[in-house]
Image 1 (cartoon, rainbow, N blue to C red):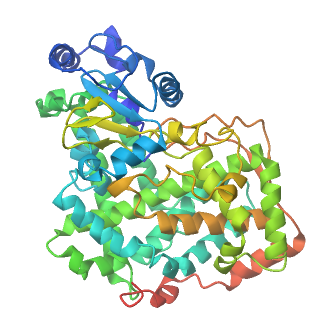
Image 2 (cartoon, rainbow, N blue to C red):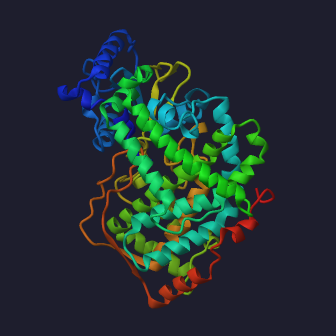
Image 3 (cartoon, rainbow, N blue to C red):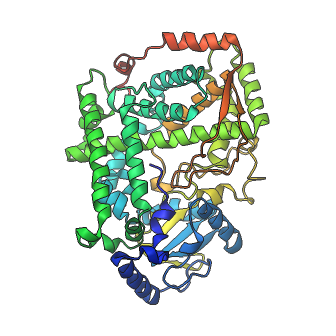
Length: 517
């Protein structure tokens, strides 16, 4: 769900007298008290905060990403920012991220408290929001059972089906965004529940979109902004906490979807993640509802991320056509025009794979990363990092670091061939790194290879490469392009492949199961 983390933690309505209500008055008192009592000595450098509100007034929407980058250029690779009573430390270099989030991961692997998302909307069941500890390790072990590198190749029949449907659908429409959203949701639904999502406007996608809008509405409300900044407000009486009812509605909607999906998966004649989870030793002692959400989380999050990355690829394709032409030449040389690229071709397509890696860097899908929290007080390069500080692994600042990347604003896949050891922030850091990265990478690589093999992607309007949706996940805003098939012969190949591929997951999922895992 595309939620703006910085917006959640700020109080835009609090700054307007028209919106002052009892929670805001209480918040002002708490902010002032925290301002007076909070020890700030030896924190990392950063912009001078205003009393009570700190630096909130300087961070809003997509401007937050570029404001943080400007601060990193001014103050260095690790900075501190004040959001009301919260101290946020932003990490803007891969070196510091490695030192703290990876090498000291036993300290920096927890999460800050999210009253709306975690307590109201997911009720402590979301893996990504869990604090570091025993429950999180249980979730992680179970998810890793299905997502680890060794088993990712077994899912390729499902990835093959979904990418072929995408190519076929693009023969008749240029509206790529709903197609890019359907593909990963259908892939994850197939793996999790043995059920494909064939239509772009299916019920599952509608439910997820509705829940996402609910979260955004809560996050952008006066109370929602305040409670994320001051979690103690979540303990106020119900008449002062309208966000709880909104969060409950979103929870029930998502929970009902997850339960329906689980029932379908359990009834399936073929193996899937939910059936595998129920019988896995890693799931021993996990309650029914929690297990349902562990698998539901993998299903949901992967869809948002892969869809966003594919949208960024299209943005890069129309912004840097010369780079795409090099990939097409490689595809024609290695694959030819007489068949679709396959997974076995990918090791022989280094430039095309580098296009994917550069896509992840050039417009990182999560520009401010997902916040960590340190569970112990720490010191780094003479700076104090108080226990319980929110730590932002600032992907945008890291991947636009001129000391690491030559001309970082340019889309240059060659950089990954010249130096394969370059760092990449997209998959996260330490114990909180993305568990599904192997499946996600395989999916994006085969889709990108097949799109470049089949289509010329050209803009139908002037495209702004900086016009991104502000949020925790930040895909491009809507823009129009044309997908023009290269040759009539390639169109016939796509039509023939789509007509001939096995589309019933109960058939091709039979090759999966305990023995393959």
